[in-house]
Length: 201
Image (cartoon, rainbow, N blue to C red; front, side):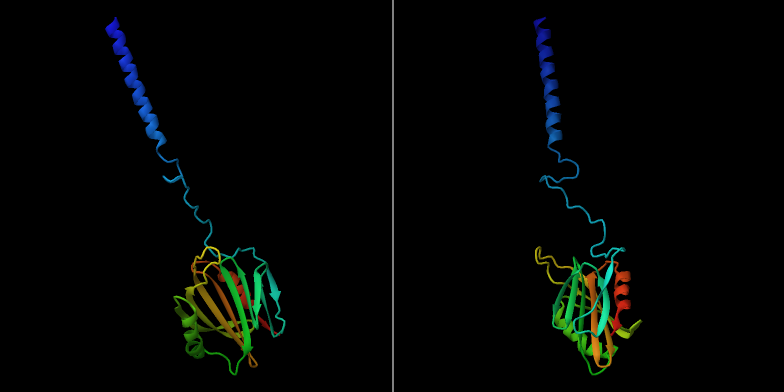
């Protein structure tokens, strides 16, 4: 009887040890959705970075000196330096620079005069195309290219941008309209709204 009791206690102890071991093993595995350090992975972005919403509203911008008007996205931050106005929101940017010019720009003049300057100013500059395009305000020269944008003031992150630079000319006056956003962002329609809205005054 004593021998039977000893064997039963020994079996119970072994069974308890196995259960404890299993419990210990399961608690060492990280919970679903976390890393072994306890930090959750960064969530994936639901929309491509830089996409301008389809329901974006636009307002007419008139520079103090006059000469032209253009629609820009409502609510974007505006800065002005001399005859250059810049509108920004998150990763997208619109720059409008105006000045006097002796002759209308051509594809050749943009290649010979503008591209070398951009090559020096824009990090990782990649040449695209130079073409003549038609807009309601008249003919323009379109230069497309890619390059790195300015580092984020807080994070220091640099985004590789796609640029569209439209050069409009009339009566000795030239306006360069440059639109930029992250490579891969689908901003074809918003950029078309902006460039189609350009009007001479």
